Image (cartoon, rainbow, N blue to C red; front, side, top):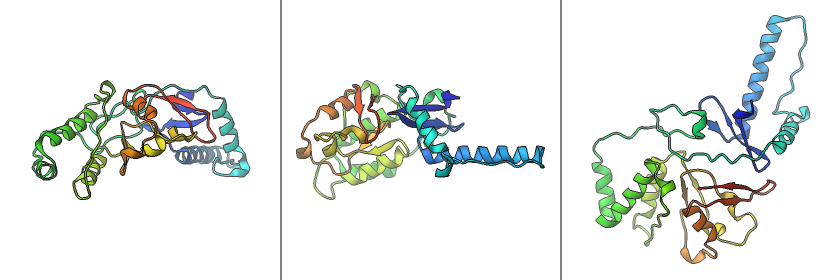
Length: 239
């Protein structure tokens, strides 16, 4: 069913695995091959005197991968946006959530004494509140209504890396790396690195390296951005 497959850029973008959306082509290949062998097993049990030949997606000789790539190349370009909201472990995602990840926890009231102690040693009260506000905006799926990004600055040992590690842990599966120097450059595929997740992180950004901030401003303002990847047709995303 084509509703289980989303194509962007003339290629497979994601498929529904029954529990969540998966963007891995290899996982789809394994899933199809597994289903084929399971079907062969049932057919052999039903008709043991017959011989069945199996053509797998994993085998280049079968031509199935090539046929699949031709099929996805002809599929209509999807405008579905993925991971527009975070899914916690206490909720089973629906197909229409278009989520590729599920957080392994559900927020609950409790003591955050260790976290407060750590952040309190690294940042002043006003800066700590900004960091917590940003984290809360992500956890409550409020970012689409907010046109801001967070920039951590300071010398070595001032806590930037520690805060980023915390964010990566809290938003496991919902963050991806981004190179702002490349994004703001003049390369034809500068936007090819943009992925559809709520949080994009540049671990080592130097503001002086940002040449053209148009793409960054589009991401921050949630305006349509054309993603241009090598060997694919450009497609539009809204971060």
